[in-house]
Structure formats: structure tokens, C-alpha cells
Length: 568
Ligand code: ADP
Ligand code: TZD
Image 1 (cartoon, rainbow, N blue to C red):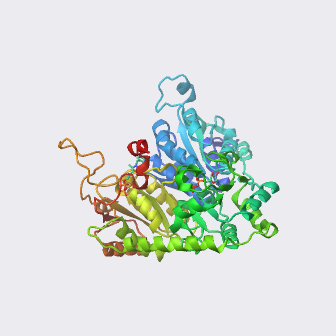
Image 2 (cartoon, rainbow, N blue to C red):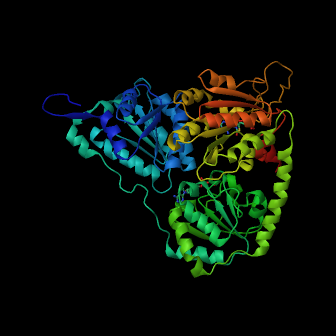
Image 3 (cartoon, rainbow, N blue to C red):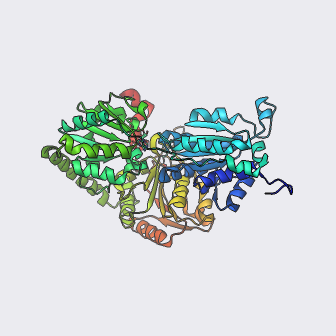
């Protein structure tokens, strides 16, 4: 950009885009307005992808899942105050799930905001973001943009990944500096997420614990999936012969059909194991905090994690192994022979095999039924069978019953192909994750959504159609949150808190934007619609009509409702 004949100048807008590009970032998810519209335009003009959303939360969710899939921070761009706050839920969700993303928000004039003089979209965004982010920065001088973006990238992806907030005031974007000076101020981040090797004595301690185990178990979490150490993780599982359990987003790290997969005997192995190796999985609510009935017999843990403060968070950890998962798993592998670790005893493996067989038979009986209308099982059987033919498809999944049943019924065959409500159990990630996954993977996406869950991000169907993304959304339509059967106890006309309009036709929504809509009332119709939609590679939505009496309150979390919890 040339402002006068003698000195070539650049400005904040250009420096932000140049800094991102220089660090290999090629996509921005966002929603435009003052003061960032021109930033989005410039990004596109400079060859980046700008994917424009209808609500910032969905753009943020797309950025977060892009970060999880690629190990590069996903970028979400928003306007100030309300746009920023809309994006903040996604930033907090990314931080909670350990996904690397950067929320970049434009902000109003500092002088006015700090004196609270009532600027357009006035808000002290930096301070509001701080507790919800792994790190938060503001850049005030154009010559600091390079450093600001470098710090944001490194904070997002190094150590335990998370969400980072970057505040860019409007005045900064318009600031001009000499072009050469600007160029020199940019930073190419070297080795943004360096390997972190575990201490040798920690490795020996973990191996010694494993050596003494009679009933060992490996538990793979989404940290293991994120780490992209797929071959070493498979080698550890197969060379030790230890049965393993994948957490929901770690499904597919090894195919769910693997002989050592103990998912079908989950309760049994959690209760019975004596030594559990946690690989990138936290002992939070999703694992019953590592104690209580779920965990049955006393046990000892090896915990592999990059965050040292995760250790002993819920129960005492006998053998912490701190480092990146690739390095830690590699070190264990290298020590297996030295430590003399043999395959687990046949008795343990036989007991698991027997339990699996019984449970698989029980599930098969449920799956084989053909009730009319469909229930969760018969609809998911149809989806499972179609997806088996497409092992590289991305699966997004949210809802209560829809999430719980799909997680156990649909097999995953490849790593990082399942994206769901995650650590918070959040509803609303559906269309954002679907768009993010489609954009960065270039592969089709199937989103299996409860009707309530879908509602949080449903307007992004327009975005999916606008960018012509190969996303098929399947709505499990049972007329409400959890179920569709509640009635107002007063007999009044106002609907009960959990119910929706009966027999809604979600398929008509996508038709408004030129997508393909299907209404499926039987497993056969669902199979046909899904096969056709995937083959077409076009935006599609299937309204799957599910029995409104099927399912339970809160899916499998019934026990967390205060009334049930109080009874415990
Ligand atoms: P899940 O929900 O699947 O059980 P969590 O999100 O609870 O998994 O746990 C993921 C864990 O993985 C976090 O504690 C995080 O610090 C850790 N983690 C993330 N990336 C890495 C990595 N590259 N190396 C080691 N640990 C990692
Ligand atoms: N709001 C947000 C952001 N997250 C939440 N988890 C909830 C509300 C509470 N909630 C759940 O935990 S699941 C759920 C809600 C509203 C929806 C369940 O209904 P559904 O699924 O139609 O999506 P099923 O399959 O019919 O149970």
C-alpha cells in the first residue's frame, strides 16, 4: 500500500493478515462488522479463506475443532462487545476441551472504554476474556502485531492446548507504519509446540507399575487423539496386549472393531482393572472422578499428560508421566523389553472377552428390533451400517440420548473423526464443528443431532449451503428436549418446559437455502436418504422421526439431576 511517493507504508490490517499467513494460518472463521469487516475482506483478497457465519459462537466452535484436527490454532474473528461475547462461549469451550484456538475481536476506542464514556459496543473485553482463556493479550501498537500474534499462537498450541484471546482495537488496525519496519516486526514462530520428554525415572516408575499389574487397562482420551501419535499408541496397545477403552473422541484412534477394544465391557473393566494407564484423559466427571462404584476395586494409575497440575486432581496418581504423548508413549515402548513386561494373564483377557460377548449379544437384540415409529436404536443401526462403508467420514454428535446411544452404537475406524459435546457436555457445537471439520478436512461430515441440540446452531444450515459443504445433518426428532411427552401439569395451554412443536419438519429448513431435505420415518428410508446424501456430497438434512416416548431424561446423566442426586 502506498500513501505517498517517498515512503511505503503498511497498516494494522495488513500486518495482522501477513502475520497469520507467515505462520501458516490459511483460514479464518468469523462474522463481520465494525471494526473488522475490512480485515475479513483483506484476508480473502490475500488468499486466505474467510468462512462467514450467522452467529459468532458457531464460528468459534468451527475454529476450535479446526484447531483440534490440525494442531494449528483455529482463528475466530468477531466484532466488539456482543460479537465478542457470542464468541466467548466457544473460546471457553475450547479451553475446557484443550483445543487450540484464537479468538480475535475488534474492540472500541480504549480511551473511551476505560473512562466508560459509552462508546459504540463498549466493553472491557480483555478482562472479561481472561478467566475463560488460557491466555489473553491486547496489541496497541502496529509494530507489536507480529509479537502479539506469535504469543497468541504459542500460547494456544504449546503445552496443554487451549483458547487464547487477542484484542485488536479499531485504532490499531488503522495505524500506519513504514512498510519495511512492519515487515521486520513480524515473527515466524519456531517450533510452536516443542516436544516435552518425560523424565527417565518417571518412565521407569510407570514401567515398574505395569510390570506388577495383573489386570491392566489402557484408557485413551482425546488428548491422545490430539497428539497425532497414532502409530506409537497402536504399537503400545498391541505390543503390551493390554485391553483399552477409548473416551468418546478417542474412538477410532484404533478401530472400534479392534480385538483389544474393551468398550463393550466398559463397566466391567473399569471396576475390575488393577492398573490403569491414562493417556491424555482427565479423571473428571466423564470418568466418575476416578473413584466410587464405577471404579470398583482399588487401583493404581499411570497418567500420561502434558499438564503437570492435572496429576492428583481427583485421586492419587502412583506413576505420573509428564510430557507430550508421543514422547511418553515412545519412552514406554522403548522400555517394554527392558522392564520385562509380558502380555496380561489369559484369565483377565478371557473374562473381558466373555463380558463383551454377552453385552454385544444384548445390544444386538435391541438393535434388531424394528419399532414404529423408530427409536434411537433402530435409527442408529441404519446410520451405523451406512457409515461403516465410509470410514473416513467426520461424525459430529450432540444431544442427550442421541449422543449417548450414538457414541456406543456407531463405530469409528480412523483417528480424529468423532467430534462431540466433550468435556462440558455442551449443546450447540453441532453446525460449527460440522463446518470446521468439513473445511479443514475436505471430507464429508455427518452430524447426528438431537432436535434440541440442533436448535442452538441451526441457522448455520445457510452457511453450509452458501459454501456448498458436504455436510449431512440428521435430526433425531422426538418432539422435544430428551423426549416429547411432557404436558403442562396445570392443564393450561402453555407447553411443558421440555417440549417442542410436534411433528416439525426440519428438512424444510434446509430447502429454504437450496439444500436437499429428506423426511425419514423408517430405518430403510433413513438408510436410503443417508446413502444418497453422502453420495451427492451436497448439503442435506434428514428429519428422522423418532418415537417421542423413547429415551430418558438427560440421557445417561439422569443421576446428575438434583432430585436424583439428592437421593444418593
Ligand atoms: P477425554 O475427555 O477424552 O477424557 P480430556 O480432554 O479430559 O480427554 O483430557 C485430555 C488431556 O490430554 C488433558 O489433560 C490435556 O492436558 C492432555 N493433552 C492434550 N494434548 C496433549 C499432548 N500433546 N500430550 C500430552 N497430553 C496432552
Ligand atoms: N444448554 C447448553 C448450552 N448445554 C446443555 N447441555 C444444556 C443446555 C442442557 N441440555 C443437555 O444437557 S442435553 C439437552 C439440553 C438442552 C438437549 C437434549 O435434547 P435433544 O436430545 O433433543 O438434543 P435427545 O436425544 O432427544 O435426548
